[in-house]
Image 1: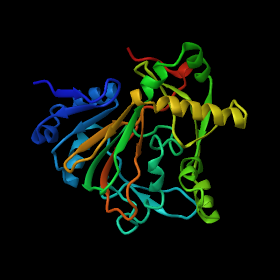
Image 2: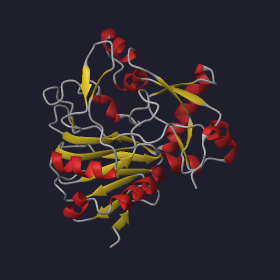
Image 3: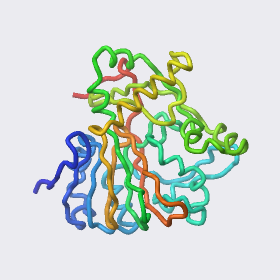
Length: 294
């Protein structure tokens, strides 16, 4: 029996209606993956998954990210949570290592672009405590944003590369940071990626994020202006879905073809989301580097 789906906007996001037992069994995993790539984000309501169930769903859809890494000059070892489930909270008591970075989630971004040549394929999120106000999560379709650009602009962007960094991702959200904080951010790795990703499927998407620090082929002013222009274009209403959370929800998004952000919520909120990340499956490739898979 085919999945029952409802498009939530014309250009991005679909709601899937599936029984919890069928989701956990993985019997529709292939269809869900195909829909995820086609629509950018998926929402399933009324599941109320615990952590082990969240892991089960993640493993049915891809390679669940687990393990630890030491990344910055502070020597902190960052773990992917408990067996691949990370608690996303601004409360240091809930997640002392990550809380000091998660304020950056309020800006548009892709996960992992400043750290990895192969960024995560997808992310899964379910709420364990919601904010009293705000806290919606927004998703923007970077496939559609590229496809709608005039062809001369597309050709120009296909020749450009961008350096991604943690300071670029975090400083706009905390301009009053201390010198010590900025030094830790600056000690993290950086990556250079094409501005346009030609996927093995043949489709193309913008590789956009607040983590974009500089277009290498342009001077600083031209780089700054073009990145702002593209961000404004890609986050227009027609490319964006805003998800208002309910307890029991599961949201899954394609990190390779969307950006996301959380909208502001009250200070001191108990908001806590549990996240699973699926490891990446293909590197960010420039248009000229890709052998398209028919």
